[in-house]
Length: 462
Image (cartoon, rainbow, N blue to C red):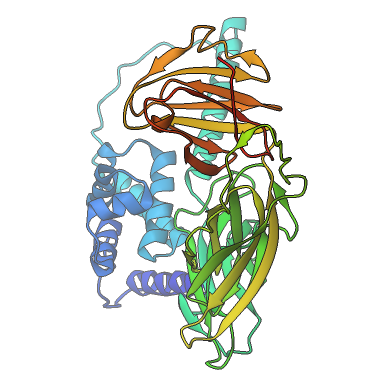
């Protein structure tokens, strides 16, 4: 027998005892007193109950006072009583039955004043005109539509419930050999339960059974596993107001070395710029260190030596400093590494708190497409004129332009870029990600030709 049936039987027995002649029992408290007492036992005030039930506080107060004049109507009053009873832990059917009884008794107790009626002539028989029939049909239609709106309002106003029964607590530690766990809980019948976890693109999705129960088996990895659970009512589209969050921790073995997988970059990949993405996943690691080592020039970048030109030797690229990457809670890590043109070896090393390490290497090539030249004026002003693939740059024009200290210009070409500067010592160049610095002396006008993979060459072009 359910708790609701027990409550109904107890109320019926109590009323029978009261109705039996000669019986002496305590009077059953009225419905307003029951609601007030139940709310006080729950330990909430009217404003907290208003937020939880979405029923205005003045209507809740009217229910607890038994003041029908403050309530909007019978249909809404029944809905308020049903929802408020569920919120207070009372049997909604029994509460509605008591409300109907007390309402009927209140009507019967009202004194009726009998007023003598004057004699009247017999009323004529009831006649139905077309106007009366149309009005009656319209009234019935309006009432039916109003009832439909009331039902839909009650249906769509309430979001689905959600509870997690397994694990019984939000924090759970399992054995170090555990690789999966079955989450269980309850919601409304047919609800779609979604379970998301960091590191997994698609969430787990299951459908609640006809009794509202659901279960889903989830994968576990070593460390703390976070699961965010929500429920969606497929009929109303509403989601549970308070999603559930569960943490399941699988301990690491002290002697176990970190695991490491590198998703990017792919081994042997070629990039047309120097921002190399390094990302992957590790376990039992607190940090990841990325180290870059220069191997040599990119294929096809061997410079062509012109004995009649005045080339400027290009220094071997200096590897960037080691990059230390923090590991996220889900074990993922990600960082960009800035590299200049050439072939490079990237070493990715994951380290645990116990000093255990695991390393992977990737070989990448940085080969800029065409010519990318950055011109920076530092230490003074300089007159600049530029030819892009043997054509004058339209922005600077045929006459060139004087650029002030701190000015930075960027040029791109398919084959060559030629720069005429009025002060070579204050004009700094960065070619395809490699800094060349200033190629001459301050105050000396010079023209430089940039044609990778060849080194810069001084020309006589003006």
